[in-house]
Length: 148
Image 1 (cartoon, rainbow, N blue to C red):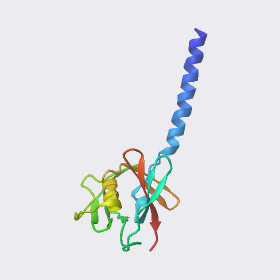
Image 2: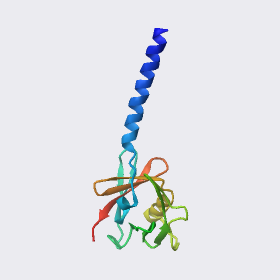
Image 3: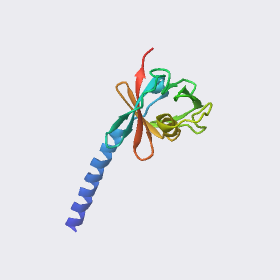
Image 4: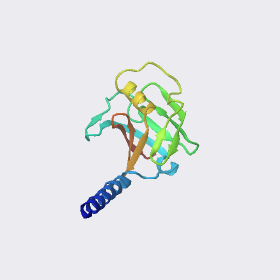
């Protein structure tokens, strides 16, 4: 009987430690944390690898940017497409239920990957002046906060 109590207590302590670690990863963000201009700098993966976006003559500032507005709209540009849609925010969860493109011209390569990833974003984190927008398979889009 005593061994069952010890096992139970060890389980409770172990779960407490596990879940207390999880709490640190979640932040209850507000729209104020997102507001402003963000410049896309890299594709990221959960294994901490980063791949810079391919350089185009329209960069920087003219492409691969997003701006979050207080009215819960996001605007910006991929390479040739205009981004302009509503977003839904809850804690660290964000989604674009009506898509991300205001117009849709055919894109390939990084511009296509950028808009496809943005369509599938489900959560984010902000550290320093960088935001990671996470999409499936623990991948993310990495942006720098852009001061005007």
